[in-house]
Length: 133
Image (cartoon, rainbow, N blue to C red; front, side):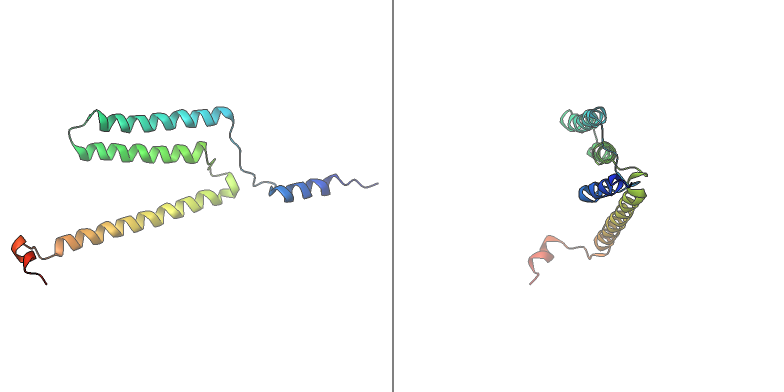
């Protein structure tokens, strides 16, 4: 006597796109609420830093805002996108690392080119600009 339960289970998994061993962990209500509260805090702090003019230097304020934005990206990836080294056999994390590497190379290269263009440009006075064709 044979049972058809495994075939039905495999068909169910194939229909819903599930595969054994590579299932992404779904968040709990508690984890979603932790992520939500952290997101609110990480949004309110930069807003307060800018509106209250906490730092005298706008560069320091911008650095804090960008740093907190990076932390908020990590919070979203962990609590809402459920990214961790175990999800999908680690491929999700590897794709993220590769993407971050490409973005860093593109940004660093762009800043390098713009810096050298600015440094190597011939200085122009307003009178010289008026005489340009």
